[in-house]
Length: 59
Image (cartoon, rainbow, N blue to C red; front, side):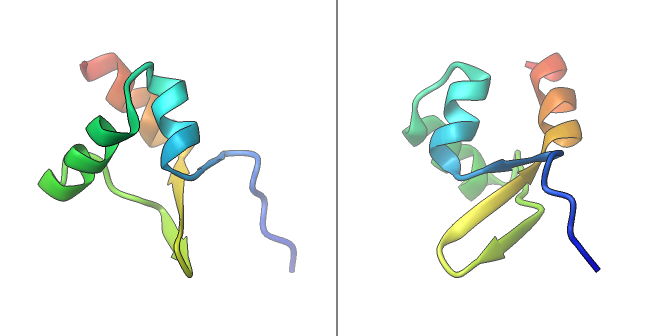
């Protein structure tokens, strides 16, 4: 069974670019629980694109 990754954003750097903020801001949001990763594989964090879009609308 193949996993669809088209609705994922891979890593904090890509998320920061998507949201127009610096990586430190993304890391602070993670620490505060404002944004939650979809999954983690080793040290790589994956974010759900739909949740990120909802987060963008809130900010």
